[in-house]
Length: 60
Image (cartoon, rainbow, N blue to C red; front, side, top):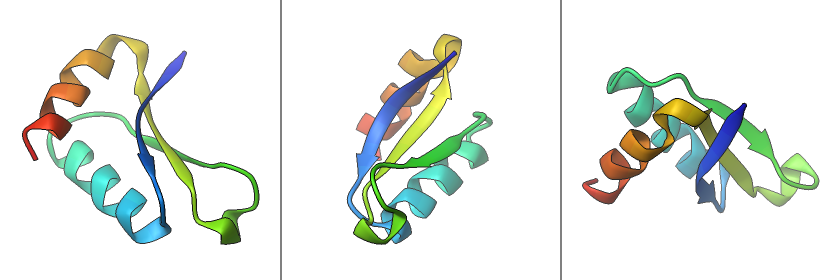
């Protein structure tokens, strides 16, 4: 299962967060909410990594 750790309001922010988390060693998926052109994306990590990923994001 995957857990949402961030809601990005555009593709550029989603890509930036994904890249940062991946550089920290996390598996990351992006999931568009609604139509992709609306630009809202969920950033997801595996359940077991969610707490650590959230801590990384808080310290960005």
